[in-house]
Length: 280
Image (cartoon, rainbow, N blue to C red):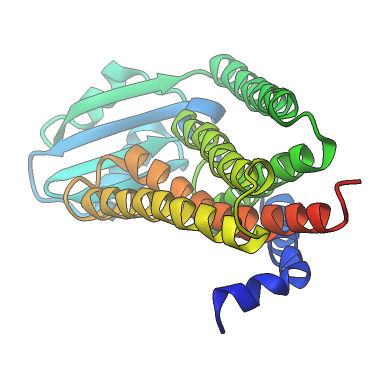
C-alpha cells in the first residue's frame, strides 16, 4: 500500500497512539515506577573486587555486615560491582565490611529528607516544563485545534515513555527525568515541524506537504534512535557500571518510537481533519 493511500485513511489511524497511550497509562497506574536512590534514599556504590567472590557471596557479606536485607548487586563484571543499599549506610562501616574483598571506587548516600525534596522538585519541574511548552505552542500557532494537537502528541509521548519505564523496570531518577524533559522538547520539535509545513505552507496538496515533513521528521528520529541504540549497546557490553547512561538511552528509545506514532498518526490526523473541515 502506497503511503499516499494510507494517509487518505487517516481517521482510524488516530486511534492507534490513543489506545497505546491508554494502555501505557494503565500499566503505570498498576505497576508504578521504581525510584532510584536519588529519590527514595539509600546508598549506591561501585566496587573494585580484590579477590574472587560470587555475586551472591558479596550480597550476603554486605547484608550481614550492615544487618539489612535490602541490598542489591546491580552489575557484576570485569572485577567491578555496583551495589545498591536501601538505607543510608556509614562509609567507614562499609569500608570495614569490604576489607580485603573490595575497594570503593565511588560511594553516594542520600538521606530520606533530601530524596523526598528531590522528588517534589522533579514533579514541579515536569509540570512547569509542560505548562511553559503549552503556552509557547499557543503563542506560536494562535489556533486552538493545531495547538491542542501538538500538546496532545507531546503528552501521549511522555505517557507512553513513562508506561515503558514502568513495564521494563527502568527506575525514575534525576537522569531519567532529564530524558523525559528531552522528550518533551523533541516531541514539540517534530510536531511544530509537521504543523508548520502542513498548516502554513500553500504549495502542493495536504498529503504532499505532510509527506515532505515526514521525510525530514523520520530522518531526525532515525538518527536519534540510532544514536541511543549505539549508546545502549556500548554501555551494556563495555561499561556496564554506567547504568545511568543505559537508563537514559532506554527512556529515549521508548519515547522516540512513541513520538513517531503520536506525531505522524495522531497529530497529522487531527491536522488533516481540521483542515478538511474548513478550519472551523
